[in-house]
Image (cartoon, rainbow, N blue to C red; front, top):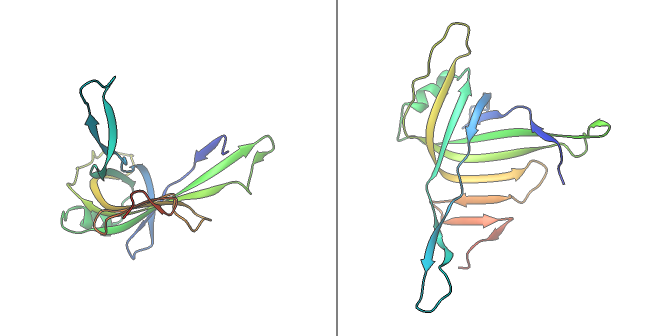
Length: 169
C-alpha cells in the first residue's frame, strides 16, 4: 500500500517534441460508464447496470511556461497529438523518502483541443496556458510495469483494465 505519497511534478511530453515543460494542473478524463436503469413490475428497487459505452473523455491541461509549438497546436481544433504526463509518486516512511517504493505514474492520451482559453496576464506571474481538450485514447500505467492499469482507445474500440478486456467480444 502506498501511504504518504505526493506528486512533486508533472512533466509533459508533447508528440515527437519530447519534454516540453511542467504542468500546473491536468484534469485527466473521468472514466464514466453510462448506466442503464432496469425497473420491472414487482421488483424491490431500480437496478442500474453498466452499458458498454463511456462518456466523452473531456480533460483540461494547464501548462506553465508553454512552448510555442504547444501554443500553436492549441488553436487548431482538428489536430490531435499524443501527450504524456509523468507524475513522480514520492513515498515517505518513518525513515524519510522510500526510494525503493517511489515510482512514476505515466498517463498517455491522444488529445485534441476544443478551444483555447486566453489566460490572464499579470506582471511577475508565470505565463500559463489552459487548454480544454478531448481525448480519443487514454492509457495509465506505473512506470516500471508493462501492463497498463487502464487502456481506452475510442477509435479502436479498446477498453481494458489490468490488460484484460472489460467486455467480452
